[in-house]
Length: 71
Image 1 (cartoon, rainbow, N blue to C red):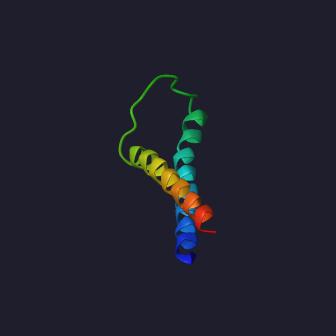
Image 2: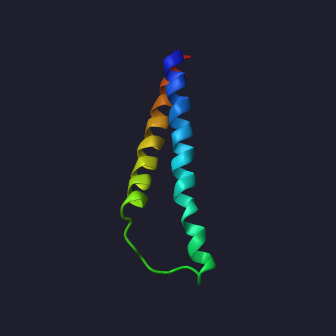
Image 3: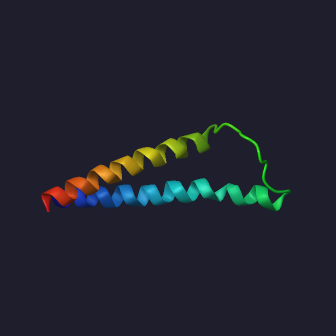
């Protein structure tokens, strides 16, 4: 049971970091003339962080359910 708890802690820290890194780039555009207001595609690191946060969120959910079942 302890390895599952450690894995959930590591995944939760990585999830928080990936979400905070996504939000870091949004404030810079607002100070230089506001929001674009249109649709744009995610590219490069932004796309990687987006999909990584989805995968980490799913992994966190699975680990939380496993920890609850085994506790």
